Amino acid sequence: MSDEDGETVGSATDTEESTAETNGTDIGEPSAETNGTDSEEPSAEPDDGGPPIEEIADRIERTDAETIAEEIATLREEVAALKIERDDLESKLKRKQAEFQNYKKRQEKQREKERARATEALVSELLEVRDNLKRALGQDEQADIRDGVEATSRQLDDVLEGEGVEPVEPEPGTATDPTRHEVLLGVESDQPEGTVAELHRPGYEMAEKVLRPAQVTVSEGPADEQSDSSDE
Image (tube, rainbow, N blue to C red):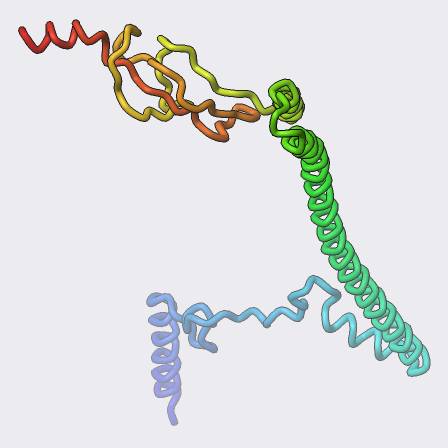
């Protein structure tokens, strides 16, 4: 080969390198960025925030087998102790729940006893009233028992009053109250129209609750006023 040929080959090579540089390309290995891949190595850090795997492996290599065995035994003991503590807490929780249920049952029984005792006291007082009525009725048929019956009636009123029971006895001319009065019918009366004409049966209320409404008749006004209205 002649020198001229060598110069020609060298010129061609120089020309190719110059062209590559001009086009912004590298003749060497393709870069990771050009191929769209990530060149970073996957992280060896554990997800739980503990020491890296490499650090753990290095520590194991530098530690003798006996020490590692002791550490494993210690960890197993700690796990066993935690399990015992967990079981103990679960047992205590179950006992507390059972105790609470028993407490609720005792409270309910206590309330039932208190209600029974309250009713027992009332019935005991009413039995006294019944005994007095029986004694009055057991007297001679010719005897005047009015005084005894009146006394028994007063005794019964005292018992009801002691329990907070109040009579509902509207006076004639009182405005009717649908929550406390039961209207039986309308009648001619000198009382203003729409008011209570007469009390038929008293009612009773206790602790602002109507136990039985009072039965009343309602005034429709005097008879002459009604006739005047019909004449007109």
